Image (cartoon, rainbow, N blue to C red; front, side, top):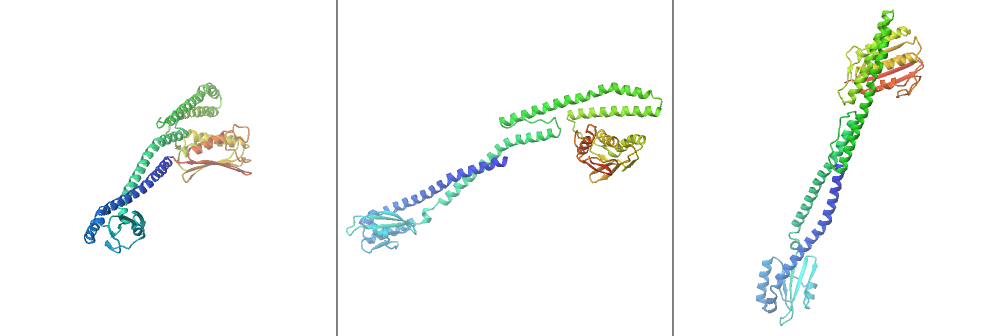
Length: 422
């Protein structure tokens, strides 16, 4: 936009300068020609009296002296064939002036001025001079250079002023664009400076108001999510009491650990929501090897209870990835939960973590009936679930700069989760 405004002013000022300077340049040339003609006419008029009264010998000296002084050819045609001064043929203009008519004509060698002189006893005489193109155009080139140089300077000045003005308009718009992109990247504390024209300031104010309103709505939503900690406290307490009342100590410890894990997951979700609402942009990271090993060990107990053969193949850690441990754990739980929910008991599955260019790859494969395509979407499910599990895993992968892919068939399903480095 800034370049377009500058080009518009450049084109406008250039056209104006051309429309003004071309006629002015032609006028300067015409004035120079007229000035040379007037000067030459005045020179030959200064000897009119001598031509009308002096004898040829004295007149020859006067004419030659005037020609030498002016640097211009001057010829006097007396009645008969007598010619004084610069040698010149009798042109049609001279013959016409011999009839008593003075005139100025354009010829191939320049501008010819002839002056008829009456009063000689032997008949009329004619004074002729020639204004050359060089004399008629003296100073014109210099004047044109000055004019067009001044025009170019004015055009350049106009372009500079237009660029400055365009900058004052474009810079606030660019700032608005930057702020909108920052808001789109969840930087809710970004605000636009009310600068520039009145319309741009109004847009900046509206954008700031919208950002503030979004932040308020998100904060209210996050606080509603935070209330889950209080709503879940009572049922979690009851679940712990039930677990402690079991006679089987191993079963009691396992249920208590599950309740603690549920409480930690909810608390982590609440803290994460509050950080995002407050505009915390600290980059997330965790050790993928440790998180995958922890969640695989957790699900391994349930796999034994349901008769599922679990194969775990993990690359040695640490393997840092650009996602928080809570998000990665939730994604792994969602993927493994799908295996248990959508495959029959005794279905073998595997969990593999390996390095890849730019990150690590988590692969969860099972020998179940397979997963239909098109399930990576929020609310889309192939069974009776909520359809959020795969979307949680997809968002965790994308948050790290990776992606989630699902391939399925009669031999089972394979979920590949690429996690990017911090």
